[in-house]
Length: 546
Image 1 (tube, helix red, strand yellow):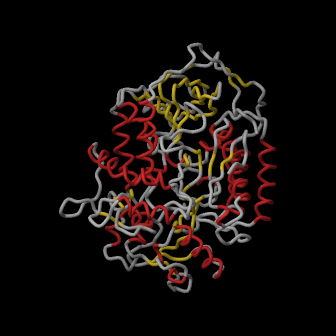
Image 2 (cartoon, helix red, strand yellow):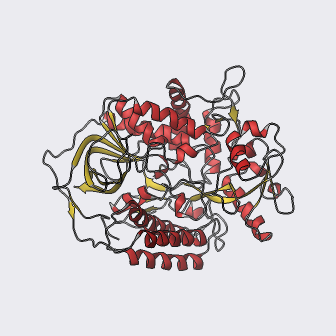
Image 3 (cartoon, one colour):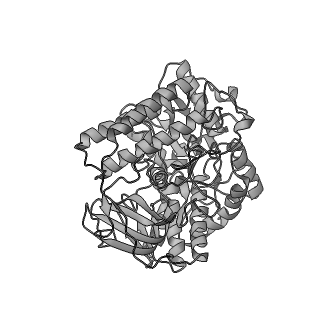
């Protein structure tokens, strides 16, 4: 696997210097950048597209936190551990559920507006595998958009933050096993960017004392996903090529209920709809979830997704139905979902919603501890790009925004408490000049991306099996070999390279774990195995450690 994706020479490239490089525009990246700037650090916030583009902005359900009078962090912890199917790290889980409410209160103090009860207390919803009503939400089903709005406002008002939009981070630069920043490709100019670093299409070198990867997830590796365009696993690939450890890459969560209509995108139908009482019905109109789990529609996501998958197969159908007509005032409670379904001719107050599972969230990722440290000094990770162990084998609903707030802040706190400049005063230089320019046009690259998505959905979906995965691995390896040794010179070619690397990492991890646990279900090993009650770590230089 090639170390670099782009030919470059830092001696001749435009250079930007900063104390902290933060990569990503979601809740974790924005939180880390703001807390660093508040503590006096100069931050360069590099954003692949615009500041508005992230999974956070699309998140509907809410943020899980123990604000209710009948709730406490210990109960939240127990629900997290149950959902994680034995692999949620208790230490980090306790930190997140204990510190999370304070981070939400801080967000409220800086302008975030969440839904309230008539008495002024936070209105709390309930979602799958939660034993209490503890989901803080905004505007019914637009929580992520409100969180992102508040954080963007905080970031824009902070003079210590420079925003660089349309900036694709290409390669991490390491020396003496330490990270010194990254190379980047500027894709286009944007009036919103507060920089004059270089012209569009130009390669730049960002020299940073500390680098935080908050690049988000990888749902776009699959054909059917709830994720936006940028969720291509770029952070995992970027880290892996630099020798950073990845952990639990086999655990990809499929959300049970995405809108399933031909010709329309896989729009997420929030778990909060089931929390409010919606019922899953098969093609015969029968409610089936009580047959699969005692919590019925509020069972852990992996259980619900597999049950739906089985009901679809039994009926030879590409969807089943979510019946929200049983919810009083459903349109007022979920206005964004109602509006979207209206645009496709479905009135959720009168008609069941056709749904099917879709790739949604990555439990695995860049291995970190409770302060965001990776195995490379100077390099941190947080949010969906990271694997702290909180999410285990199957994320508890609405713990993702919470983790982004807590770990984004903790990364900033750790960096602030370790105020050390780069240990070498001289200007280090890096270069790569051996990559050839492939004569592939945008259509060729798009076709290769589509092929990789089909492979991932076919072989690494809700149900997996050894022989199928071996066939998929061979096809992925052949596709990667076809494109190896070539320089990525555009965002699309960078995407393809990142996708193929992350695809291969997930495939190898899924083949290795010979059991079924959480979101990883194998027909040839259908039961959990106590011998596999452990995390698995991959690294380009030290593969497959457990």
